[in-house]
Image 1 (tube, one colour):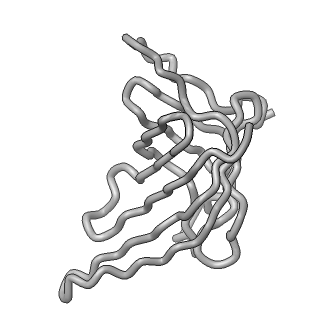
Image 2 (cartoon, one colour; image 1 turned 90 degrees about the horizontal axis):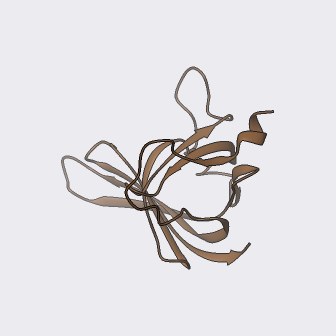
Length: 137
């Protein structure tokens, strides 16, 4: 039943709705961490596949063995503000997750082919970035 709600447009009033990303997207997910003392930036990168369908929801597959978790269920797209709120059912209810989950509010940019996501409100020493390209419907 949760999957039936899928990715939905926000019910907030909008002046112009450019539409949100729908389809299958593939490319690198990057976790960047800046060491406070040294200023050195560590980067971990894996390839993921993100499928977004209005009637089904979203799911993350691909290289989910070590750095990024497989994630899925619903999201709310607000194309006026270019934000997506992902609600991952695999995110642990307690404790810290051992892998990154596509969960929470992300800023996005989408031009019909390129789909980029960056976590909103991340600590200033961490960045979670997705640089994806559309690969199918």
